[in-house]
Amino acid sequence: MNPYQLYLVTDENLTLERLKYVVREAVQGGVTMVQIREKHHDVRAFIERASAIKTLLKGTGVPLIINDRVDVALAVDADGVHLGQSDMPATLARQLIGPDKLLGLSIENHQQLDHVHQLPVDYIGLSAIFATPTKTDTLHHWGIHGLKAALQSSSLPIVAIGGINHNNLKEVATTGVHGIALVSAICQAKDPRAATEQIKALL
Image (cartoon, rainbow, N blue to C red; front, side, top):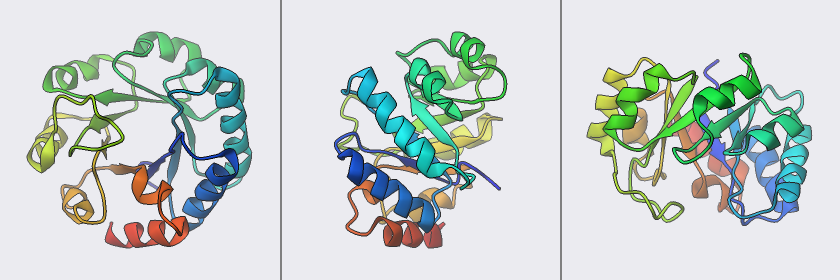
């Protein structure tokens, strides 16, 4: 099974109860990977939320990825870490998490894409495909053309993220990309399970 296919990135503005509900329903609907993203909570709150989701995912086969924080990933024994360009260097993160955990890296421009193959990462998050309100500091949008070019030039699995919704999902999926990461389309849905099932059907 392709673990990257439907990659849920959580919304830090959800309460813990709502977060657990969204993740539980999304997994029932067919999400294949879950990344906990917390930009503004303190480490203790991050660990609490990550632990709760780790417990919830037990036995589902869905990997738990921690955004940015290697210490939190180690604390909860997550399945992996996803790094941004300003986070801990990938080589150091790999030394800390060991050879068996998943390591992802966000790639925001062509220079980073050319360099990534020298790094010990398992997959890349190509960001942002389209403009998105959840990430306002992006300087470059890859678009469909850029995504296709990246797929041709990279030997690593690529997860597309940024501005992907029901309207453009099919177009993104037809590029043959390994995975699609979503935040709002699932986290803000009234019925996260139904939303996930609809997305899965489009894939």
